Amino acid sequence: MRHVAIVGSGPAGYYTAETLQKADDIAVDVIDRLPVPYGLIRTGVAPDHQSIKAVSRRYEGTAMADNVRFVGHVSVGTDVAIDELVELYDAVVLATGAPDDRPLGIPGADLPGVIGSAAFVGWYNGHPDFADLNPPLGAAGVAVIGNGNVALDVARILAKTPAEFAGSDIVAHAREQLAASAVRHIHILGRRGPHQIAMTPKELGELGHLDRASPRVDPADLPPEGDDALLEPGMRKSVTHLRSFAANPVAKPVTIDFDFFAMPLAIEGDGHAERIVVERTTLDAELRSHGTGETYTIDAGLVISCIGYQTPPVPGVPYEHGRGRFANDDGRILPGLYCVGWARRGPSGTIGTNKPDGARIAEMVLEDVGRGAGKAGRPGLDVLLASRGVTPVTFADWRRIEAAEVAAALDGNPREKFVSVEAMREVIGR
Ligand code: NAP
Image 1 (cartoon, rainbow, N blue to C red):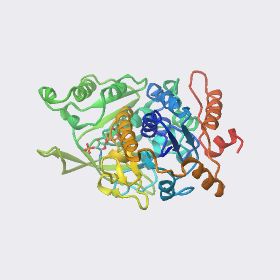
Image 2: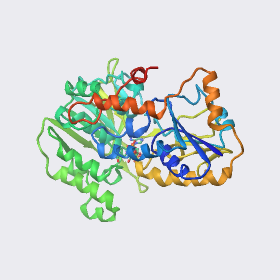
Image 3: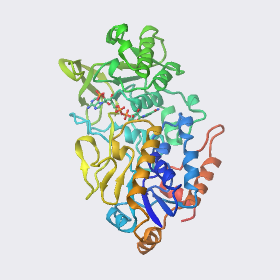
Image 4: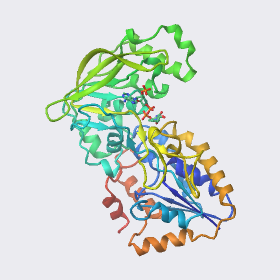
């Protein structure tokens, strides 16, 4: 029997389990620190993007296979050490994603009212760590830093009316606080230009169809139209959206301004964020941004930095600081220890990118472990956890939590999520 532990039950974890599970004589444990599975699908993908979230049905199929087990509410590093897992299992795969924000590193970044996207996205998605965030939504201005898809998610969620959340699984606290929000002017700050955005066309196009909000692009920021021919097709489509926003400004009560060539310099305010100072930039031949010395100020009671994520380092596990991921040779970290997904590649790519990634790492693991080394595996973990008084949440437990969430949903919504670990555990009676 081969024993494999996967740490993290998000897309990378379940795609890896999906391939492993098809092999003979294998037992796969998918361990997660939360009592609920699916990682970024549940707490990262925007609540109004239900079609993307639907991929969890596929992971459910894997989770319910006889040789796969969900080991929920077990924290690796606290309840069990990585070294202990490596002792117990033939292979341990870290599929822990990249849950930490890259630091903004400018003066004022630690003021109240300056929030990283991990916290803000976690808040509207009901991640227990961020349920009490209470982002300040009392000022008209908000600055969203970054030109990626997370910046788009954040701006769209801030701009939507309560009615536009119909059919979503945005959590009650976010629904209520956003409904009372005073936010009217959202600025999306990109330190480079329209041809350097990391936004995909579908997501960008959505901004053009909001009830009370309209996107605004300064035509002067756009490169000559002929230059678009040099872009790859997806980027060309995205830039076409920006051109359309610039050409057809629509007056609506909420504005979403694209501030291109705008590098955040400092966040200022009297004890909390009130404004952000921005320096205009130009690009060099390598398309890197450089400050011009010209600055301007945007009123912002809330600043959300969406500048990418990083994997938290784990003591004893080699780490690549510059890239915010585990140091690895194509997925291999140390003998018996692997990584997959964002923990391996860094935080880029869509959910689907993790499918071939997971399959490849699984094949590598199967080749490396051969027929297995007679390790204690699953029963060994159970003995260790029991000795520490830790009772894992099973997949059957999760299905009871899920059923309670579905039962509590508003009409037309898929679920009303529990936002605390205590509430989740209460459903299963322990
Ligand atoms: P991202 O795509 O890497 O974008 C990060 C943005 O932050 C870039 O525009 C980058 O600009 C900017 N940035 C980085 N450091 C900065 C700094 N110090 N100051 C100002 N700007 C800075 O990251 P993301 O938006 O977090 O998305 C992560 C991944 O998830 C991406 O692959 C994304 O496509 C995916 N995602 C997909 C969806 C979807 O498909 N619906 C939704 C959300 C996320 P530079 O280019 O100048 O470095």
